[in-house]
Length: 188
Image 1 (cartoon, rainbow, N blue to C red):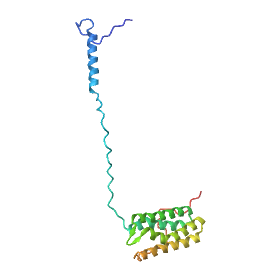
Image 2 (image 1 turned 90 degrees about the vertical axis):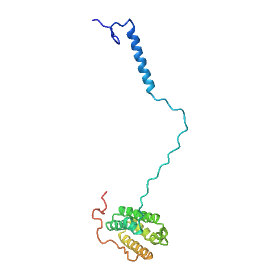
Image 3 (image 1 turned 180 degrees about the horizontal axis):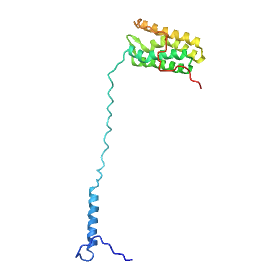
Image 4 (image 1 turned 45 degrees about the horizontal axis):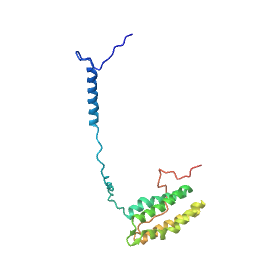
């Protein structure tokens, strides 16, 4: 088997060694082109000052006391009653916590309503009935729950009256207001 020497270029009439010189020149040209196209680092500069983030625009929505009561408080009041009615004590405890949180959110959103300190008013009107509901849930006592829930509902109405909203009357739910939710306790 014979091997033929391959040359970079077979130029006719080229003097001996010309192909190697020509190949070296091509290689040097490619290397130069590659180096010339790579960016050179800029001289050291002081770091740019941090860019201040522009805060996201705040929606121009200011819920009224009625909005907050209808959206946050009333549904929790209803669900608490339904959980107690079905003796779903774990869910009743959850809804009691959610009701307390909803009342706290109302107080943070509207710290002063008319001339009243909302947090102080809510605490004065609901602390004792909420504690009684919590104790009934803890003891799994349906009779005590119903009585405490009735006192809580009366406290809601007394608060409404104190703020000239006597026409807003809350009552113990008479039916299943959330027909898409099962309030029965789950079997372990």
